Image (cartoon, rainbow, N blue to C red; front, side):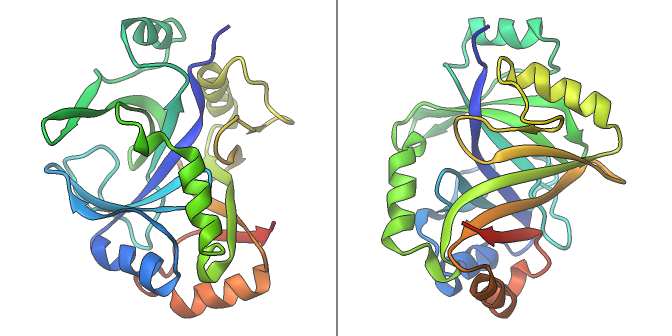
Length: 247
């Protein structure tokens, strides 16, 4: 069976003061900018590199799927990297796997096709979700550039090496595991509830009292130093569920 996705491309965090949150990541924590805080018409966001993935801070917007900000801030969108273009054949395979989806949503930049999002409507819950993001421009897909920029700044003040884990809470472990397996096939889980895709962090399901992303885990050079810096400098991101682990 041919894969639908290679792994996680990026995650986004909606915030009421999104530009201020982005400034914390860049100016206070020293993470490398992949794109500055920018208006894209229907939304505004800025992105930084965490190695294999991008962290996007996005303006709160109740009209966009999973983009109404929570307090404290949470990862509310998981963008998956498709294994092949999102065309008619891709959509047919999604449907064959009984994965409920939206129609493809097409976005442009400067009058050119930029990316296509395909929202998977039965993953996670009403306030957070999963979608496939198919970029039509080469730069946003450049994994080597993400890693190089992070290495050039020594991982910022946190000493980030890479994003290594994305933990998702669910009330129904059995149903969630079955959904994720259908999406990630032919990838087999490591243990009962963790998948390690080719790109991005491991995805792990845990029992929880609601459907949400529990935390994002980053491998860092010194967890003790990184935790102190995060606590002292987090600012508007205070309370964001970040786990800093030894790399």
